[in-house]
Length: 110
Length: 293
Figure 1 (cartoon, rainbow over the protein chains, first blue to last red):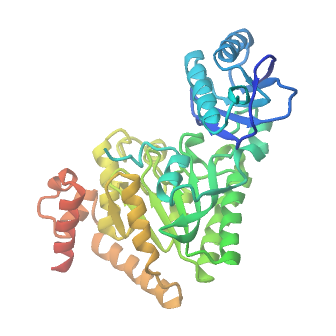
Figure 2 (cartoon, chains in turn blue, brown):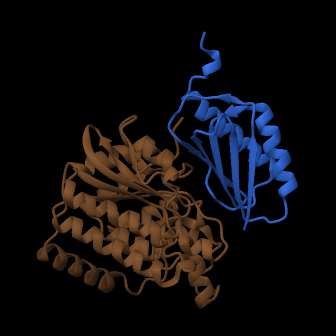
């Protein structure tokens, strides 16, 4: 197992909302847990993966994710069992969309 | 289009079986109660350890519910998963819900957790029987792609009643286990017809191991569980003796059979090859008319 941590700043801080879990830790699959957290506006991604030595690829995938979904005050936790980068991206998008559906974005308030 | 039970995750099944938005999860993923054994073995963990438990309502009646997630380690039961199931059943004794609903999907004990897993499974069986003897109805459902085998196969048969779909499978040693232990001549686990004739939902229904057979839809399972909540199976010495008599008669009547199809012939199906081809309704009609004769 390898543990990786990423931190992004400059996202939009979201109103606190209920935690959301998507995906299952099956073979070639992963679960993504999205939670509200007081992180001074940052978004953290913590990955526990069975596939060791892919830190650079994880960095690219989660950086792309943050570019698509610049979230703030959000903690993302991943348990991975060898998912491909495409699967990881889709799961992250699904998690962000389901989480955001329950949240109103502060910036959108007049 | 039907929402398939077979293809759904544990969370989707609970959502579809309980009344909308009534589910309150106990020890949700954010609590991170994960398996200490998998961590020690350097294996991936799941935030819910492969089982979702909580409370909710079904048709307005309060229920406690658990769903095993087959995609995580084949639904295998480890120490944490077992403790969650036992805790839910203990809570039922205290809170007296209308029923406990267990959505089984499991290959049995999680071998990586060795004795802790074995003990967990035996504790689940005892907790089911304790809840029943406290007057709580414990209802099971089996219809996922991993079936229900090993210790959880026994646990499922400890319930008051079971609902299965044709796709569901219930047994003790799973097909791959039998083939590994006894050879492919004894049991070819890749022969899907053979597997379903031995452990599939229709076969289990004909033997009386499940009380309701439904189509593969979450709504069908919900309706069957709702119906089962209206009646309670007796759970006393007479009921246990009756069950033992039934099992003795089963061995006497069917003990020489070599295949599910032989059993169906003994039960009055003159052309057993037709049976797997029938849809659920046709099958139930024919099974019930044979039972009446």
